[in-house]
Image (cartoon, rainbow, N blue to C red; front, side):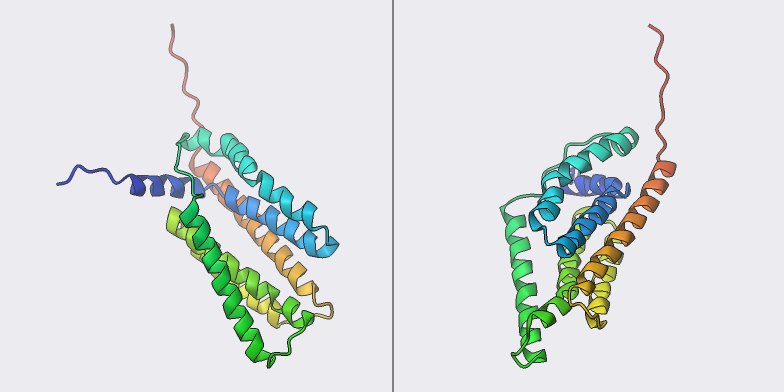
Length: 206
């Protein structure tokens, strides 16, 4: 029997335990809300840069309050790196290429801003599909597959529905995703806290 320790497997198990706290879902719900606000108010800088700049800080803050007291704190290798960045870029370029070719043939090369807005939820859903598959690979969280399917199918549904305002489908889709992730996050956090209560050990007498 080999005594070799699979560090990557151990780290994946730790990430999976952490992913059960629902905090990632809560933050994604907040991010979806801000993205919806981008299309509603056109204030791109305010609504996009805020969650990007402070997402990791909020994640660590919330986990210091709810997760680490229950599971302990572990220093994990950062996900960010050249390979991860290139992989994200490649995936986005592939999605853009597939969407562009599909719209070209669908509208015989004569698609307008209206058609682009119409299919934007599908594009966003495809991006979230990749993000959730990546989350599944790094954490092993089975719920990530559910999120991937719901995000993509929801994007297709909102793209196919005929809205009067071409931007409404994007706003309603993002708001629906926001509500879904917030509810999922609250449920997972509740179950996590119930499953892993904080145990205060008595201090030993000096």
